[in-house]
Length: 180
Image (cartoon, rainbow, N blue to C red; front, top):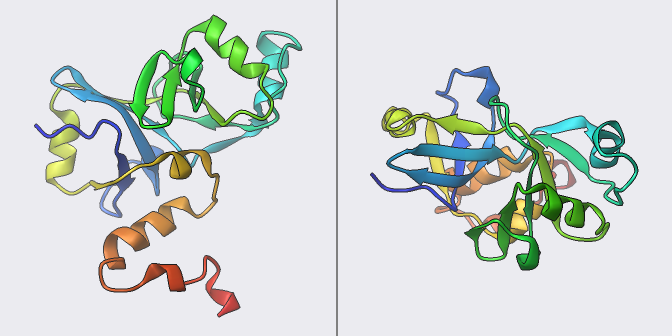
């Protein structure tokens, strides 16, 4: 087994599960016990602040969008750049936090680099490997910039880089081809 922890998984067009249509996942864990990731490109129609008012009151300075991390229920999870509040390292410059006190600290930092998630994507031992064998997922490198930018076309951009990026200089292709 080759671990995908700290990498991106891009849902291939072959993947039939509607939960993952055009999904870009950051893999948080992948070992012999299973795998867990967070979908980066599933914003919810609710801000973090609105969600906080419903659950923890007004102690929230974060205006950002809340994201659906996947179809499995779980605690609020935060990907962020503040090493002092981390529960786990994900990749250089990106940390995961699920502990309530640490999340409350992050919620008081309105300008910090952070993305908030409800739910996650999870796989039993061997399940993700089986999906990868039938090319349901494509693996791509991850970095902090990709994690913290919020582009609506993230899947398309990464698929383009993955599929044709080896043949063309993608830096010369605009994000919006209509400006060509």
